[in-house]
Length: 433
Image (cartoon, rainbow, N blue to C red; front, side):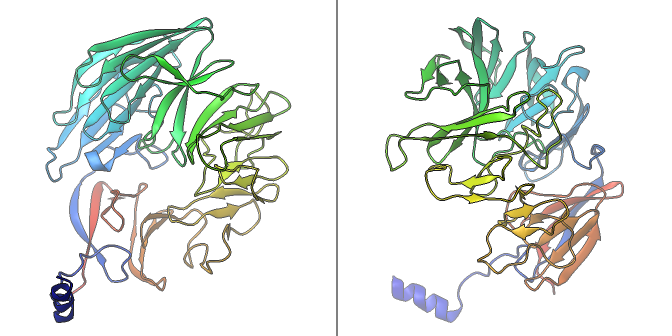
C-alpha cells in the first residue's frame, strides 16, 4: 500500500489543494453581492453576527442571508427582543448554538432580562416565549438543548431548566442561602464581543463558603471539594488547564483583589495557587463604583498566559502553576492585546507595540498597518476602512475598502464579507489565471 501511495505521489496523481487566502497566491473573487439587508451599529458591527448560521441582527431587524441550505428571510422582532447587547445572556441579546437561537428580551425600567424566546432559524419565527421574574439571569447549555434561568435573592436562588426546542419546563430547584450565579468561561472566551461570545461558558453557583456546578438533569448543585471562595465578591470564574479559577472584583477604594485556583486530582499542581494584589488594568476606564481601573469585559487570558493585572505590573502566569512557577511581569502601564493572529502583543500608551515573544523574529504586524489593524483570516487584514490581502512577503495582492467591520466565516483562509456602500459583499479565494 505504501508503494502505491508513493507511486501516486511521484506520478503527480494527487488532487491540488483548493485556494485559500494567505497561501500567497489566491486572490479574491466576488461570491455574492446583495443590498445591505440590515445596517450595522455606529461602531460598524452588528449586535448579532453568526456567519455559520447566516444571521445578522441589529435593533429590531434580524435577517438570514441566503447560502448553501439557507433560505433567506427578514424578520422585524418585537420591541422587547430588539438586539442591542453584544453579550449573550444580557437583556436584548441572543444565544446561537448551531441551529438553536434563543433571544433574551428586556423591558422598560428593567436592567436585566425580562423574557426568553426561541427563534426558528429556518423560518424566522418565534416558536415560544416565556416571561422572567425581575433580576433573572439566563444561560444556554453548550449543546443548545436547555435554557437555564436563575432568580437569586438574599436568602435563596430559584433555578429553572427549560427544553430549548419546545420551551417545556423540565425542572425547578431551589438553593437556600445567599447564592450568586456566575458565568464560568473557558480560557480565551470573551465575555463580550460581536455576538459570537458565550460559547464554552456555563453557570456556577457561588456561596460564601462553596462553589458548585448545576446538574443539567434536575438542577441540583454539585459542590466542588476543597474550593472555598476567597473573601470579597467572586466576579468571574475561569476554566483553564484543568482548574477552576475564582476571581474577585476589586474592593472599593483599595482595589484589592484575589485570584484563587482550585486544586486538581492529578499532576504537580494539585495544591492550587493564590495571588492577592491591587487591581489595575491600564487600558480600562476608572469604574465609578470602586474607583479602580477595571473592566469585566476585558479577558484575563490573552493567548496562552493568564494576566493578573497587578498595579506593580501585570503578572503573566501559566494558569495551571500560577505564581508557583517562574512568571513574567510587564512594566507598569503595559497590557496584552491580540490582532486576530497567533501573535500576543504588548501595548502601552506612548510606546511602540512589541511582541511578547522575542524569539520568533517576526514583525509585530506587516509594514504599513496601524496598531488598529486586525486580521480577518490568514493574509487578509482590515485597517480602518482599508482592506488588504497580503502575500508571504507582505506585498498587496488586493486592496479594497469597507464601510463596516468586515468578518471571516470561521474557516482559516476562507471567505470574507465586507460592506461596499449599500452592498454586502462576500469574497472567496480563487487562483489567478
